[in-house]
Image 1 (cartoon, rainbow, N blue to C red):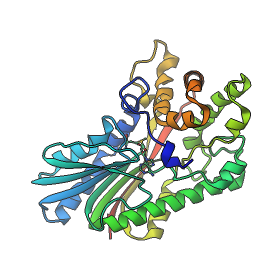
Image 2: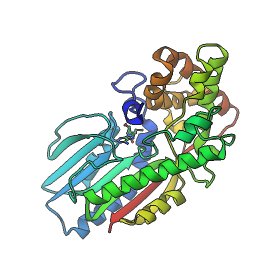
Image 3: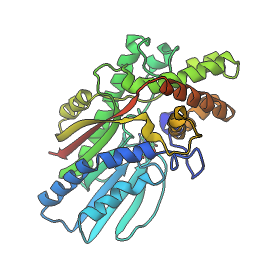
Image 4: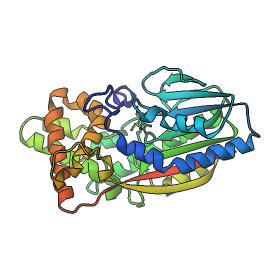
Length: 336
Ligand SMILES: C[S@@+](CC[C@H](N)C(=O)[O-])C[C@H]1O[C@@H](n2cnc3c(N)ncnc32)[C@H](O)[C@@H]1O
């Protein structure tokens, strides 16, 4: 099964939907807004007040975050015409005056747009998703669902190599599509540390693995099922991002920075009363992101008990003083 067939956020507007549980991702978009604003302003100046701009939002998903950046950009620079491309694995279609909006289905690890047609690309919290699970990970990462300090070295290397392949493919495809002087701002869920197994990025998955193991112990999930499940994600450090951009060579880096946001930022405030439940929403946020992947592997009937256990583990850890954060790496670049 290819990752692109099973990787999408929870749709609709229900309690477990991405639309209703993506406050964290919206906060990240708003925290990186100054970088996006600077890129678009410099683009506007360098293009000598152009008559139109063509922009693409890659990995736009569905819900309020889809249009946040585009709406801000339209307000920021006053032009007679905008063309906006919304891209994801899934299709959506719409029209917002005065923009022409179109939906582009497909994977961003391939060509999506005609050559030299885009002026600006934005993508947030999407590029950490890999195009596939490397073979070595499937074969050797039996006791974990992601990279962990106990994972064999070959597993960590295979995850990193897959990120390098995917990210450089992404850069090469976009380099064909963006006009010279065009800009790209990418925010990727990442890590600060150079250690790929650091808590920055692995802890959330480690706790999800604990919940899955509890279900194995209860006989609800088969052990072999758990052993063959891995998360198709790699959370890079800023150094790793810089290395790939420089190696590919089509873009020059204007800014590269990390930002941290505590887990509690997921909170919608809808949790039950009690201090430890402040973290209840971290589980809901994770569910809206990862449930389709898990359903495919473990079946829909295991989801409610699984996320109940996961939320309890998260609340318990947090109540005992664990201070975890999401780390994002933002890179702003110009097409040479
Ligand atoms: C966490 S959501 C982020 C959505 C939105 N950008 C935000 O910040 O709220 C990640 C999105 O990336 C999309 N995605 C992941 N890999 C992709 C790929 N190879 N091609 C296109 N979209 C991809 C997923 O389908 C998902 O909708």
